[in-house]
Length: 298
Ligand code: SF4
Ligand code: SF4
View 1 (cartoon, rainbow, N blue to C red):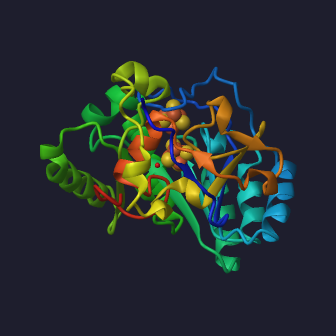
View 2: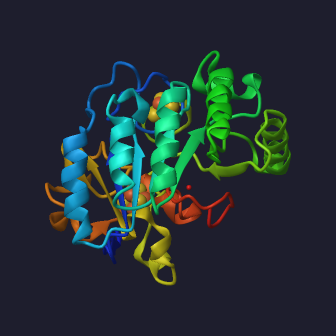
């Protein structure tokens, strides 16, 4: 008989995520763990008013940082205004594929960032150091478009964190990282920041790879000596257009929806999903910390 999944309590709501781009994306990457695409409107955009309401709610709960994801957040026409508003409340990080960024948006964001006491981070997903290694995963022409976005960010004074999903073998890790860094320097990003992430075998990636095996689960024994603060769900929640969910990884699972208010979402969550096993193995998948195998983040 298998043991019930161990639950992780929310120790404190440090990080608040927003599924601000819903599941709409201009790309259709074949490893996307929520199968985002130009046609997937299963989750919709959050409006500036939605976000303002949650920011105000978050103050009383002591939230320290805000994260924005999708889909592609910059398809949301209110994204710049949302980030400008958020910088009045705390540090903001936006996860983007960088293919739709405009100079005027970045100029406005740099101006807001310069006036704010808080940081503004961009995390840019690129999955290979060349068109040959990136485009088979993210789509024809996406390497050039994303690198153009990275150059715009650098020109506007930002230092984006480049995130790459590990689709290569362990033996090639060092070589791939070195090639990434060399490519970014050559493109004019003198001190590149790089974060390597494990793939999550959900959504499109479940079709591309094998998905999770039923034995890929976290057991109570595994959690006994484990530092649960490495798990996103221990200190974060995410707001979508349906309510508040446990984490950015599981929004498509019905049990991830914990309530309509941030206060309601402060309950323990059982780590019963295959993806929890990936979080357990790699830790810190969603933070801004740099790459690594055991403490490695999106
Ligand atoms: S991985 Fe990112 S860029 Fe690619 S389809 Fe999913 S949300 Fe869009
Ligand atoms: S997928 Fe990861 S962050 Fe989400 S509930 Fe499971 S362990 Fe927590």
